[in-house]
Length: 526
Image (cartoon, rainbow, N blue to C red; front, side):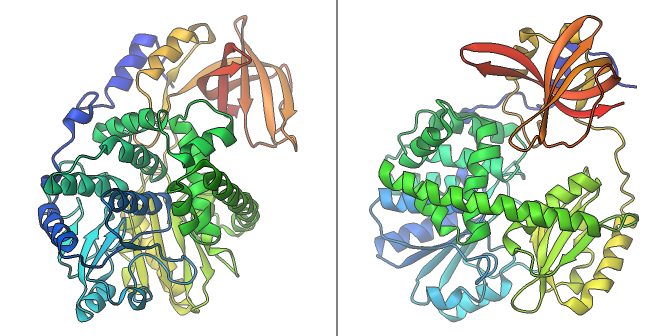
């Protein structure tokens, strides 16, 4: 039974999400609280003074792309030439690997961003080549940690940085702040914060504590940005302002699509565009990648769902020649559709099964798979998302081990959606409600948009919309109060006159200067 909800009750529930209250940039901890931050800073300063060759090694997701971009922009701003590499997903694999080493021979100082914490062998090769290695990463540590000159990772036991859930771009930003202080130079850290906000949202960091403060400041900076890439994105999307939803649903997938479909360097080139003409051309390329990504992802998702074994606690699906670049998104789609953790694997050119996994609910997929690490060739990630590879002959044993680990973890499938905050009567849906909700934005990971339930609602109208009729526009009525609603991506059929319970979020719909309230329908229970 979902409790009735008042505006006062909603405000209390939302306030409870923020144990420390609303933090601001004044509350940001000092860079030196990161283990090895001062050591890394001193080494980079020495490299600059001695004109050493510095190479940045990034990652092909949005966090890795923005982290690489941040470091490139910083060194450009201080006029120091560097090399940068983002490994190609298909040719090089993830992060700092043995495949990358031949390309960085002659480098004096290698600096990873958003990767490197699992690069034990590659770190040894760097040492043999006389390359000093600084690792900046935010992912969980493996049992064996690479040997490096410095490791900046907030998940190290001896690290005193107070927040464990930060992304690679935040660590890169902190490193820039530390270098700025050490070099005693004036640079505008807010110009870098706008890119950090993109990474925090795209990498699904909890939008609480300093993350919320950095996202709010970053979005404000984005909306005042003169950066050609941001101006081109606004121009293309025909928007005057960028919101956290625009980042999560539109900008981040565009940036991600380059690394998924071809090479993430295209996304760095876009973000570092120095004029609007280059930015427009590079944005068009990303749009092409994203269009192809959507079609490929949809096709593989449909195939994968048919292969899920209903009795398996963790869905593990193997496809032949499935596109490596989209298996992570497919895993997320299948996990949501089947309401269980999912791992999608495909045959790689090296003859291994390679893929990604996504969790569902409160389940810790990293811990479950970590217990089967002995069957894997490569493994990394965090609680909600993993990457892995294994030999085909290890697959069945791996599956059995994962099932055993899941059962031992005693994970219980949540029958109740934790994002539902209460039962709301249509008469309580007002602009006062949406104004209250705006106080707690941005919503996302760790601060989910409040969902409401309304019971005994009559469907007055249900019309399909969209190019292929893939969405439905509703008119609902409850005790004489009528509300408009939309349900996206559904082929369900609803009879008018039917009484139902609906789960939804409330939004303001701005159209031709008129603002109306609209229900974004999540689920309809007949």
